[in-house]
Image 1 (cartoon, rainbow, N blue to C red):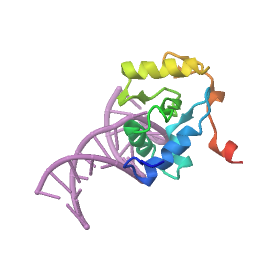
Image 2 (cartoon, chains in turn red, yellow, green; image 1 turned 120 degrees about the vertical axis):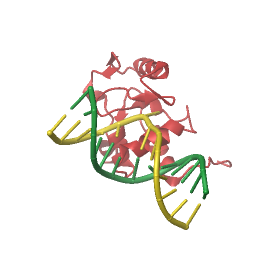
Image 3 (cartoon, rainbow, N blue to C red; image 1 turned 30 degrees about the vertical axis):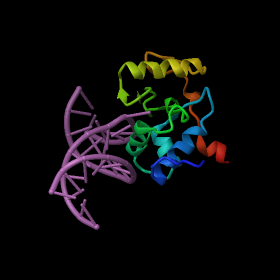
Image 4 (cartoon, rainbow, N blue to C red; image 1 turned 90 degrees about the horizontal axis):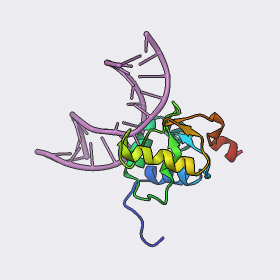
Length: 114
DNA sequence: GCCCTACATCAAC
DNA sequence: GTTGATGTAGGGC
């Protein structure tokens, strides 16, 4: 990488974790926050909202802990958010009414780190 | 350099 | 359904 984006170590760490999420799997902001050593899922949302690495970073695989798809492309509960649902459906994630139906679809970092 | 505000959230009542 | 909290980033002075 000759040209690096003007991001902080924190943002870089978040994107690295998101890129580790395999297709057909999703994770939550809280789980992602813990994976990067942060106790605030809001910081994750801020980093993903900027997402200078999109679509290199599958930020659409990050949903809320409430099993809702959360936001996408700088919007929350908008037209872009609806597109996020379609992306997950295309990857084999069972989403209905903007909510995740299969809880086993969650991706566990600890399980992979094992 | 310091202060304040916003956030794609989470948890509690 | 509303409120408080938690950490990071950005803008103003």
